[in-house]
Each structure stands twice: as structure tokens, then as C-alpha cells.
Amino acid sequence: MSSRITSFPVDNGDMTLIELDDASQTKILIDVHIREAADNEDDPTFDAAGELRRRLKRDEKGRPYVDVFLQTHPDQDHLKGLQKHFHLGSVDDYVEPEEGEEPKILIHEIWSSPIVWRRADRRTGHTLCEDAKVFNTEAKRRVKLFREKKKIGGPGDRIRIIGEDENGKTDGLDTILARVDTTFTKVNERDTGIVEVYVLGPLPSMDDEEKEELLTKNRSSVILQFRIASQPGQAKNNWFLCGGDAEVAIWRELWSKYNQDRTPLRYDILLTPHHCSWHSLSEDSWSKSTDPKVDPDARSALSQAERKAILIASSKPIKDDDIDPPCWGAKKEYEAIAKEVGGQFLCTGEHPNAKNPEPIEIRLTSSGPQMGARRATNITAVAGATAASSPKAHG
Image (cartoon, rainbow, N blue to C red; front, side):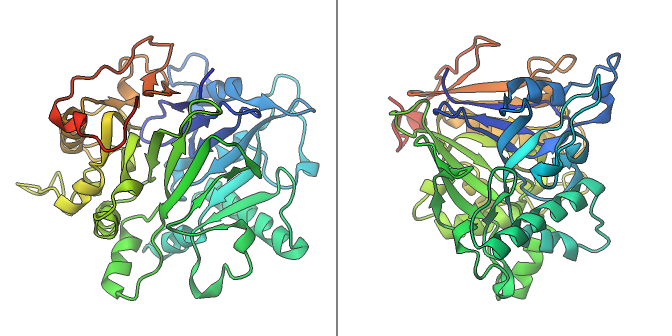
């Protein structure tokens, strides 16, 4: 097999699995949105939990696990089902399932950012959902364990902190800290040899109070660029960009930061932020404004597509109405970006059709991303001069 990225159809929510073709067959899960309706066999809701378990490895005791769970931010549509389907706490306290029950999934290593949670707490009237509360407790347990033992724990106790916290709260955590504008290669304490992760966000706190307030309002999220090889020994030339629910102020700030060297913003695969929301592209309201305008800097930041790029909206089917997210206007912008490079725009709620959506599975090859074998459809180039001039060759 080759490395692959799969986005599950989970309505307006995020749930993406990266599977690396390294010696350990490493699995990285980005967010989770598992709806209770899927437990009913007569309900058509996609069984995301069942599909995930089928793809996971088992440890020596037969327990399913992910090497990493990346939590981009603490909204319910990125954490739903966590407590029900995942084991939280010491591995020693793992409870074997009763007859007829599915075993809970172990998380060997968490990737999360304390500054994202702090900004979430500052939102007026914002209350964390129960899944968010238990996740926060688990993240704090792992950090406390590291501080006490002064070393990285075993699988089930590990955490990587994404971005420095304010007021020195991450001092002394350098071993498990990934700062903004740095690259790390270890996944679950292994250097796979086929992935590099560049940290773009969350953006650090700013002295400018107006900008900091915008970051708070705009749901600052962990933003990572994965550079992945299809197999060991291959070039890391499949680039995947994900940014949770980061909205327009974030992308505008990133463009200001990276417009001279756009490499950190480039992608072959983009998980369009906030479920294809207009608010990642504009300060205007899609439903209330008579002529909503795209923010040119935010669009530029989200336009750094390589040739034949695939842009994915993890959302409900997108209709020509006033709903946001997903937003019809945002879809049209992303379709235009894809067209410029001979790529395509896909929606998890519409693939292959809205009645029976299936996971969007993308194989990572030495010549770039291709749609998975399930649909047996490769990305085909229809690009013109823009695609031909792409600065990163794909064979």
C-alpha cells in the first residue's frame, strides 16, 4: 500500500485519518465527530466509528489504537463521540468491553494546543461540551505526568503541545513542545522517515489588542502542513494543509507573514477550514450582506494550491442558499482555486452522492495525490499555464 488520507462523511464536522506507509503503519486521526444516530442499524447515518475501527491496528492485547489524535480546537463538531469511543486516562485503567460491545480506542499520543483552549474560554457565553471537558482533563493529565517524571511517557501517556502558551505556561516543556514556524518529524515518539509536520498555528498572542480579539473571535485553531512521502525512500511531495475552524483574521495574518515565502501555505490537499464557511474568506455575512466581499489576503493564503490539488469540504451537501457553513459562496471560491490548477473540489456529504456518502480516500503517490481505489478514479489534469508553472514538481 501507499500512504493515504481519508476524510469521513460526518456532516458539519471534521474527522480525517492519515495512514502512513512506514514500518509501523502509523495512524494519525485529526478531530472526531461520531454521531449517535449511526449506532442505529436502521438509520442511514454513516458509521464513522465502525469504519475507523476497521482501519486501525491492534496492540498485543487486541485493543485498537491511533498513534496520534490531533485535536485542532474544542468545538463539539470536532470532538463528538470522544468519551464514548476512546479510552481516556491511564492505560492501566483500560476496561475490556462487555460481550457485544466494541472496544474503546487507545490514543498513544495527543497533539493539542493550550492557547486554543484559552481563547475558547474567552468567548462570551461559550461553554465547553462534555467531550471537550474530558479531553482537556486528559491533556492536562499527560502534561502533569511529564512534569513529574521529567521524561516522555509510554504509549497512552504522551502529548505534544502545539504552540507556546502565554505567560510562560509552557516553560520547561521544550521536549514535548512544537513551536510555531518549526518542523517536527516524530510521530508517537518514532521518526517515520516519511512525514514532516510544519506548525503554522495557533498564532501566538499579539501585543495588538484589536488583533488578539480577532483571533479570539475567529476560533483560532491548530494549523499544520503535513509533508508526506508515499512510501519509505520516496520524496515527501504530498502536502496536506489543515486548519480546523480558523477564520478570516487568521488566514489574513498568515498571508501577511508568509507572502514572501509561500512554501508553508502550499498544499496538494486542503481541508477547507470551518466546513467550507464563508467566514474563512470574508468578514462579511453571507446571509445578511447584499454584496459580500472576499478578503483578498485570506483568499491568497488559501490559494497556494499545487497542480492537480484536491480541496475538501468536510460538511453537509452544499446548497445555493443562505446557510453558512457550508456556504455556497465559499464553495464557488474553492472551485475557482481548484480550477486554476487543474484540480478539484469535493464535499464529504456529496461523495460519491448525497444519498449514500462514502469516505473520500486519497492515495499519496510519488507523482502526487490520487483518488483511492474504492472509486478507482485518478485526478486528471485539465490545467493550463497556472498549473504548468507550479514551483513544486510532481514528477
